[in-house]
Every structure is written in C-alpha cells, then in structure tokens.
Image (spheres, rainbow, N blue to C red):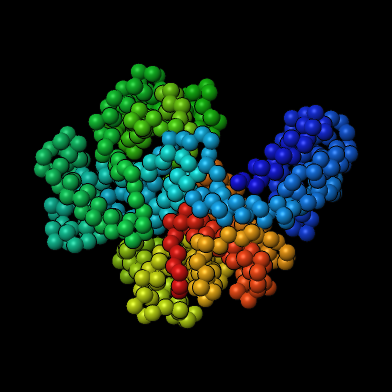
Length: 578
Ligand code: ARG
C-alpha cells in the first residue's frame, strides 16, 4: 500500500464529513517522531476558506481520525496541526499482508500504466563515455526499473551519438593517423585519440577542415567507402560499450542512435518551415523564440535560436531530437518520454519541448537532469590521469572492485576465498551505483572512493552488509526466510520503529517513480537499515521464543526482502554472505 496516499484519503474523507468541503488534507510525515507519525496540515487553509480559527476546525478532524482503524491517537497541536500516531495492531496486520505478498512486497501497481520511453546513457561514438554518461546510465537504469515495477510499459532507449560532425573529422583523421590494430584493441581510446588530433588540426588548417566537411557530406549522402568506415567505428564502439553495460548489468530495449533518424531530417525541417515554426536566417533554418508572442518567458529572452539546419545544409542534434519525438509517438504510441541527460542541456530540452508541442505532439515530456560529478578539488571530475591519459570507465570499475575487496578484507569476510572476487564485484559495482543514486540527482556531488566503499553510513556496502547479516540469522537459526509467516506483533519500541519504516516502502517507491528521484529509494533503504540495526541490538531474534520469535523472524525476513527488492530497483545486487 501507499501509506501516505491511504491516510491522506482517509483525512480528506474526514474533512468532507465534518466540514462539508472538499479540501486536500495535506498529510505529511511528522518531522519529530515524538509528536506522532503523520500530520494533517489542512486546518490552516481551511480556516481561510471557512473563516474560523484553525484549531477549532482541527478538533473534529482529529476526533474523526481517532475512529480510523489505522490510527491510535490523533491530537491537535500548535496552530492547528493534527498529529496522528499509527495503531500498532493495524500496522502489524498490514505488515503480515506485505509478508504474504511475495510478488510485489506490498507495492501496488499504478492504475493507469503509461507507455514510457526512457532515453538514457546515450554516449557519443569516438568520445570516451565520461562520468556524465555513467551518471545517465546508472540513473536511467534505476528509473527504468522503478517505472517498470510500478507497472508502466517502459522502453529503454540508448540514443547513441552516432551521427554528426565528428565523423567527418574521424574519417580524415583515421586516414591520416589511425591505427587499425589500435582500433580493434581499444576502439574508444583510439577513436578519441584520432578525433583529438583531427579537431585540433581543423582549428587552424582550413583546408583540412574543408576535407572533413566534404567527407561528412559524402557519408551522409551514402558514399560506400565512408559508410563502411563509419560502420567500423560504430561496431567497434558497440563492442566496448557492451562490455561496460554488461559489467553494470544495464540493458536497453532499443539502440536507436542519432543515425536512425537521418532520413527523417529533411522532412522535419520542411514541416517546421511549412507550419511557420522555423524560418530562414542567413541561409540557416532556425526557430526564434523571441519572435513568438506566446513563448515561455525564459525562452523569449533567449537570443540564441534553435537551429535545425545550418547554412551548409547540415542537420543538427536539435533536428534529430525533433525527429526522435515524432518517431517515438508514431512508432511506439509513446505517452511519456523521459530524457536522462546532464542539466547543462536543459535549455536544449526546453526549446525542443516547445517546438514539438507546436507540431501538435501531446505526449508528456520530461528532462530528468542531473548535476556534475566533482573531483577532490571540487571541479568537474577529470577523466584523465595526471599524465593526461584517459581514465576509461572500465578502469574506474576495476578500481571500484579492487577497493571493495580491500575494504572487505579489512572488515573481515565471512566467505570461502574463492568466492571473494565475485562478491567484491557485486559490492564494487554496487558501491559506484549507490554513491550516485543516493544523491538528489539535481545536485553536483564529489566523487569520494572512501565514502563509496564504506561499510558504515549511507553507502552501498553498508546496505549489502545489512542484507547479508539478516541472511546469516536465518542460516544460524536454520530457518528458511521464505517460510516465516508472523504474525507480526509490535511490542518493543524498536519493533514499532522498524515497522514504521517497513510500511513506507510502497509510498517511497511510488514517489520515486513519480518524481524520477531514485534517492527517495536509497533514503528509505538507509532509514530501514538503521531501524533494523537498532531493532537487532535491542531485540534478540533467535534467542527469543514462541510468538515473539515468530514475529521477530518475520520482521527480519521482511527487512531482508525490502532491502533486496529496493536495491534491485536501483540495479544493485545483494549477496548472502560477505
Ligand atoms: N549524446 C548526447 C550527449 O552525449 C546525449 C543524448 C541525449 N538524448 C537525446 N535524445 N538528446 O550529450
């Protein structure tokens, strides 16, 4: 169930009954658990609407809520809040239901599933997949998993940057400086090396730049030799990318790169012209938002137009993105498109969304932006080491696994030696993902190896360790965690506190899905792991007896399942021992 939605509805019902008006209950978790579990904030706005003092309006709401089976206490506080405390008997029964729901762990499915495309990862060929693309990959994958779990029909699409100006430079550059062998061995490194040389040369060698443009035009016109070269670049990059995605456990339903839309581009520009959305300016075709009466204010101020065709006839990133929206609508019947892309592209997406609206597209469009990963110096993390070599993503993952293993050995492992590398792999990759996902995606964050592989605090290894410790209880007690059935009875304060975390799972997952904020899931899991550890310290499980033991085993099993499920929604694995 969604606990907040459920109580909010009950409170709105109470308001209707006692005051005869439809007014949102504005239910929130209380800041201070001493005051209660949830509070209703409706009395203040109600007081304006009904011209009566808020406390006077709050009193009958509290009285009505006291009669609700989920509520043990309801008190008016302060200027007119109604503080609610959950009923422990009700809570125990709710958790019994969650325990019995092996399929969904008590998380309801949405009533109206949406056909949703999540556009994520989307690195550019010939350029290192940098930390920004790693963020997009990790966050995008978590969003796909969360949306799918709550019942949406999701297509994950890797909108590969596999078309565009870099290929002219690459083609001439490869002919000039490229090594076939290096291209086979580490294609991304080789392509990036050649690309750098070529783009530097193009800066002060106009003839070279002209050759590159000519090769690009040939490629775009279907020249067989250039097409073959391009295919090699793409294929080689795919191999390297596939390796990284396999290590991360990330998959896509579609790989519709920019090149997939090439044939649509002339038509897109014609339509924009015909519908008066774009116009010619010095040979280029552009959308000028400052010329629109009804453009959103921030776009109206922008002098920079949205260019869809350059004066040399070349199409751009923007043109492709317009085509992509049209394609997604037509081909998949997409109702919602989510773009998991660096926040620095927010102007592009704002412009794009306004343009396609004009074209009559009515799908929901959302730019799920994220901040920058910073290095120890608080500047954007450098993807080169001190001697200027690129730090590949693969080497970053290697280091994460090594560091995870070192930390595990320091902590003392509970594992046969031959299992250590595999567990270190799960822990290392999980640590990288968790460190990213636990941040509110809109903020920048500092990359910090030590925090990342920590067994304490809000970090991946800590969460996995909490899970493994729960499994060890079942091993020690020779109990199958799948067979425990409660009933859950909440007597000790630590049991009641743990239960209050457990019951929030569905709410948190749904809020994360609605807001595309995976850190709501990590926050929940962290709170859960802490509540569990307080419970474990004060409430013996295996050494207790009878009904108390059954209940505590059920709380432990439920916690383990929620940790596993929640981490799974983030693309993070668990291990039974570590
Ligand atoms: N390839 C782009 C980049 O690296 C990201 C593409 C995002 N998706 C999109 N439909 N624009 O910046």
